[in-house]
Length: 427
Image (tube, rainbow, N blue to C red; front, side, top):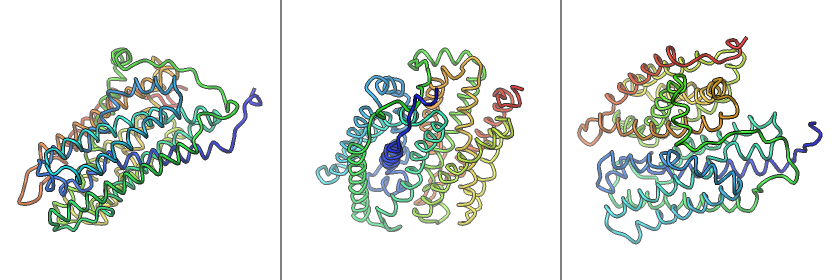
């Protein structure tokens, strides 16, 4: 049976250019986060307004995930990805041009916000293809690896983007408004060029599918969220996973987007804050490569989710209250190692729930991601609401305590409500 299918070495070219655009698109939605305090000063707005510039992008998956997934199924992986790239590139160019043609800071803010919504909308066209592209180009036994690599491309974009923004902007710590404006302008122009260059590579090198199938396409039943959500919410185990997803995404995005505020309160630089935020994502990439396999060897899933939730407490205490450079980076990496690695394990549990199974797994995971994206918005907004201004900086330590309490609630939910679905349970 396996001889009917053939693999092509060109699959790696398609995979690499897809990973590249997945990485560079991440630069666009988080472009303001690592320099949030400077952007707040430049546009004369409140921190919560700056937060929306970074949170509206991920939120678009809630609204368009199911619809764009259906479009990708009908029109193809490359067609839908190219449409998304065109949308993102247009929005990045408008962002780059806006400060040069519009003087009003309020108008600039609203244009930036609309373009961030556009970037997030275009990104959904790419994200819905994370597993569709490997399904077309890779053999069955290689698809999990390929999907892991496409996901890693997105995470690498987050990690490198967080580090690149302060470097490209090069805004001094005690900068004038003119220096901040020049730095923001430079960052927007460079990121639009990177988006355009990576998109052109994708247009030229990506192909929809190999000349002959690489393997059987798994049978899946795809349901729109308006149908899938009430169906899955009847399951107590899925309701628990929804809460876990909300908390996990919320903690990760809250820390990633607010790290500059958290770290600069202790007198550290914006650049150092971006390294701590990047350490969370890099640690997550390493953890995602190790812990799911370890879960399979151990034969259990729940302990890894419990450890991930428990690690929030010591790591946030180190980052928010100890204020030591090596410890901050180490704490960020450890937190990411366990927290982000819990995501694929959560997806595995979802597929192993007997009422869902492999046929509905794709729809169930998409629902989890969509609902989790809401946590990506709620957590940073909650952190802004709890922050207290002290002089020229904001104190986010109460916000970190709130995240710790939320993580403890998540631990209790996992222990009491999430089923153990690992191999040992099935024996």
